[in-house]
Length: 252
Image 1 (cartoon, one colour):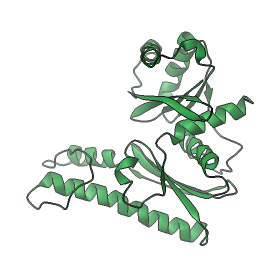
Image 2 (cartoon, one colour):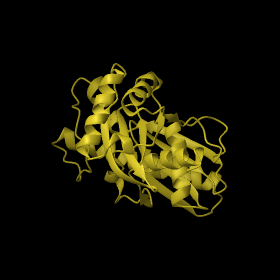
Image 3 (spheres, rainbow, N blue to C red):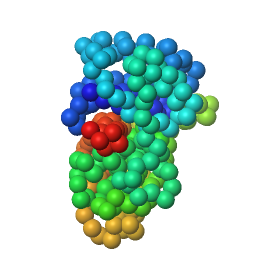
Image 4 (cartoon, one colour):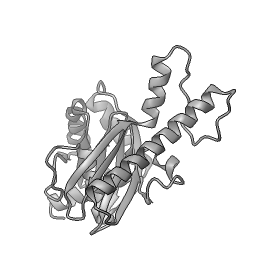
């Protein structure tokens, strides 16, 4: 079993992977002030809750966009799992001219495992919503980053005097008497519409009319499953990418 860990800005996403699939997943809030002992004890508790023996974990694969947490998570793995983790920083499988982020590289690695010989657009709905475009020859050709839908909701609640922070959900038609419904309507369809526009531009400018497979992933991707923004929903894409990266790096 390989423990795969994606350290994001809002959450740490954990998965226990074996034979190319995730057996168990769980999350923890990202907090740079947490000690290695706090993270290690959380890991021990979650493994015990899922009836997984620590000795069955044979490796740890990590992607991180929060450098301030890397030391603590490394120390936790060494102390509590007796394993020095492998961090994904780049992959020879993906041709990139700039570093798009370890999580986005992991997404691309998994995308090519699931959809080989395909042009890919990968949408990751997290703290930021990201779009990555990778050709079937595994060349990263473009990307886009916009505020995630939860981030946008929090910004409206924080930087305005009277607008509330709302729960994120797929809205009904807006009720002119409900500010909350109007915000939900604007956030949801604003995000959906922006992504459809970005996808259209990417298809036209980078894929020259070729077929493109669009993959959705991330914490709130399920909200957009019926909006025809993406073709396939793969919630654990980043963890699968970390698993395949690790097994190739260690020739397993």
